[in-house]
Amino acid sequence: MDIKLYNFKEIGDYRGVLVPIEQLKNIPFEIKRIYYMYDTKKEIVRGKHAHKTLQQILICINGQCKVLLDDGKEKSVVNLDRRNLGLYIGPNTWREMFEFSEEAVLVVLASDYYKEEDYIRDYNKFLESVN
Image (cartoon, rainbow, N blue to C red):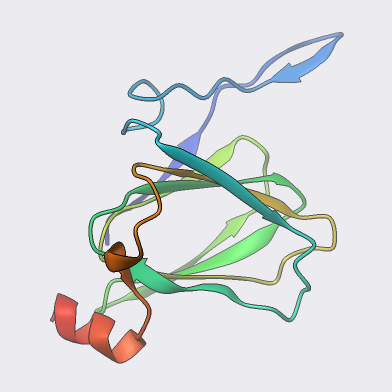
């Protein structure tokens, strides 16, 4: 499974904490799109898709959520519960984000612009494409 956890460096002093995010330095791709989600109810499941070529880093900058990852052979659940923890998800990995805490804000850094043709939204078609 093409996933990796990044513990981003925290720089802090009496003024607070800063976490630098730099493309091609501590992010393994050029960032072309950034979006975030919030006000997601705990019982809602987001995602439910894979990407053919897109790479992403997910960072829960407030609160927490869980991410189910599936490469068609094995499944893993990652708890995003620290503001400096980034989850890299490579292509051909099914993802579902769930159990959002009430105050959760999930930021996504993407390697490309939105392209509908890059999405695999049907789980059975995903399994066909990876097996």
